[in-house]
Length: 347
Image (cartoon, rainbow, N blue to C red; front, side, top):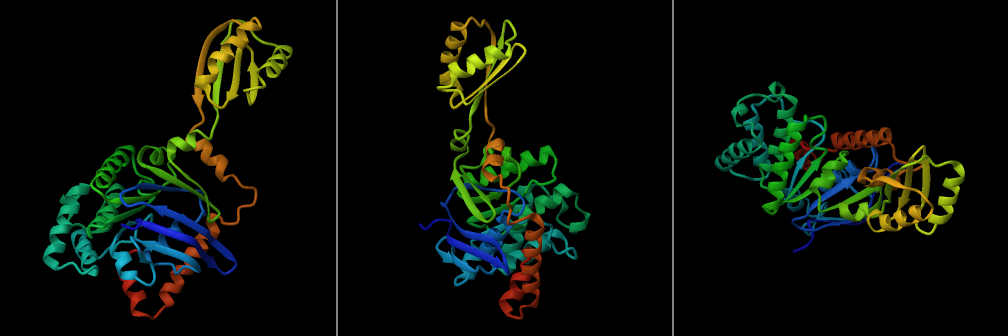
């Protein structure tokens, strides 16, 4: 079976702006894959390329082996998209909205009705099935976007910041639901700004910045790229001379040594294995240990370090402009295929 997503040297240009810069990614079937990056990193452009809303400028992009342009219909039928923005037809009851969505994918009316009821129950808003979108609360609207993504029974579920702006309870409910879907065999691609979300849910994460891939790794592997801090409380305060002596003595394994009063912090690669040696070195120099604590660099800190850039070529504003340009191009297009894609409600 081919990968769920495979891109090779994927490029998207908007005039002088390169939103995607030779981005190569592979997401295996059945994987829960996270896509992380700062605003304007190219995440939404990447998703829009997969679902056919944006035409790539170069490279290759395939979904379960189907080229996203040459085999658009096959690729799109495999995808369920829950976008970041609310883009639902407000003139119909939400059950009909889901039935229309299923119909766009060739699902017969009777089956579409059954699927609509099933997914509304699964996301917990079946009792609102006859209400219109504008009458729903913010949390219910998020649930509806997920239901719409699921009504076609997709093999690949794409979630673009699905828990943005929702309360803690709903966030955990959505986490539980998408985890169940993944365990049932659905491949999940998640973009999020919540590092905790990626760490909790994802098998692997790709960090992208300025349209480029920075790294791909498991959350645990990323954490090993950071450093640990050993915080020691001493019986007596240490002065500047003592700190300088410790910096010299611990220099073979300590990246940084700092002190304030009776507190000492030592930054090392592996706190667990280094702590015994540190204690021995401190005691050998006459320091009595009162307390010791080891803390690891968080995934969030590593993310910030990896994506820090003095010259950011893709910003939130430029990405928004790019999205507006793409929408304008779609609106101006006169082909039947462009019209059909707009009707699917994924723009």
